[in-house]
Amino acid sequence: MDWGTELWDQCDIIEKHTQSGLELVEKYVKFVKERTEIEQSYAKQLRNLSKKYNQKRSNKDEPDCRLSSYQSFVDILNEMNDYAGQRELIAENMIMNICIDLTKYLQELKQERKTYLLEAKKAQQSLESTYKQLDNSKKRFEREWREAERAALYAEKTDQDINATKADVEKAKQQAHMRARVAEDCKNDYAAQLQKYNKEQSQFYFNDMPLIFNKLQDLDERRIRKLGHGYILFSDTEKNVMPIIGKCLEGITKAGTNVNEKNDTMVIIEQNKSGFERPGDVEFEDYSQGINRASSDSSLGTPKGPLDLLGKNKSKNFWLFKRNKPTVTEDFGHLPPEQRRKRLQHKLEEISKELQKEADQSEALGKMKDVYEKNPQMGDPASLATQISQTSQNIERLRGELNKYETWLSEAGVRGDTLRYRAHSFNNNGAHEVLSPDGAHSDASTPDPSQAIYAEFDDDFEDEEPAAPIGKCTAMYNFPGASEGTISMQEGEVLAVVEEDKGDGWTRVRRHNGDEGYIPTSYVTITLNK
Image 1 (tube, rainbow, N blue to C red):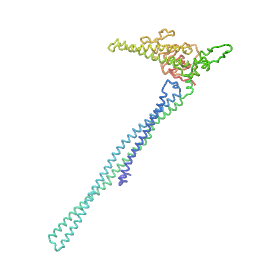
Image 2 (image 1 turned 60 degrees about the horizontal axis):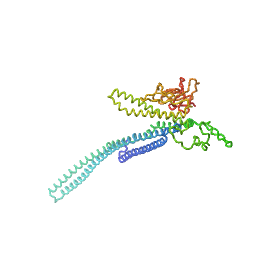
Image 3 (image 1 turned 135 degrees about the vertical axis):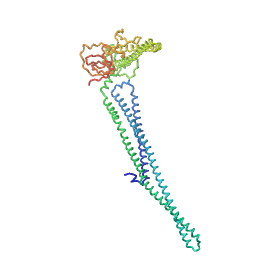
């Protein structure tokens, strides 16, 4: 069934229907645009929300950063940011694949429909014009025929009139004959116009208009098909990103399962244990016997109890009950012993890295200067004097800071004085020399100059029974293990953990071949056995 056959006389209905169909496409495009605006607004709010809470927790130096619950929350914020990106992708794809495509297609349909309606209008105007010609010829024929009849009656009447002359009779007959001929010509013209109109009318109703209506039917069906595809895309656009959205949600679930309360407890202990011994019993002071005994030194300077805050030992630090915020000092003396040692070790590592960087730059400048001296065309050696001088000053400054922090670390005590830092010294040319325990220079060179500071251990593992591993660790960086008591490792290497970090920044490990030694705790990721 087609419009040309079944709706041959419903031109106005077809015109109205096709217009309504195009308006539906426009309405759907508008609907999708508003949907994308909602998606974009939602994505923007999610991004702002993630950014808002990430900014508050972006400081990696915060104590909470190592807590699994903290890191899981950061992971959730990152997943939400990725989720927002997928919502933006949905909006972008809907704009490109639905709104823009349908809008372009709609313009083409409007132009095509306009062309077909114009053709129908022209065909109708042509038929109306032919009908006017037919009507005019019919009226002329009718008028001329009446005139011919009137002339024939007048001629007959004149012929019967006895008073009429022969000339009058002859004239009346000629006039009647002429009118009859004109009427006959009008009759023939009317017949021809009628035949022409009937032919054009048949062409109009059986060929021209059905063809135009069928074209409009095809246009409308293509519009419906395209609109249906747009409806499907509305769903498929979101379905296509569902796998990634699912991964974001899985990431949030994983962040929740990664929360480890035991690990967080260990981190809190490691970060905050003071190293003080518990206070001893308060001794009885018998003032009745004139005895004024001093406090016992059994706790090595540690306050004996909370009463010291109110008694004669107010000047001593008692960390458990201390409420006022301590004054921050450069040597971290305001911190408890364990925390102080960790901060000093961390500071030494930072200074060592800076020192190594300056030494590498000094060495590079020295080589460049040699090249310039041998090949003057490549550059002026004197142009490097300022940089070499500045680098030397930086090395001297950092060396002084390194010695200062080493002294403070020695005063703080490391693992019961069983290990102590030995730093690289740098000569004027940026070369590396190793300091022996008494401060003298050693001829030993470091295998890896990228490491600026190591620790020397006096422990001898050869006479000890092998300890059972308590976990394993994976190296995040290369470590040369140049100092006595340490062990070298390569990035990615897996080692067995035989002794945890005691708060001094070093962990004891063992290789598969039985080699044991200490490595920097910050250079590895550790997984302990449950």
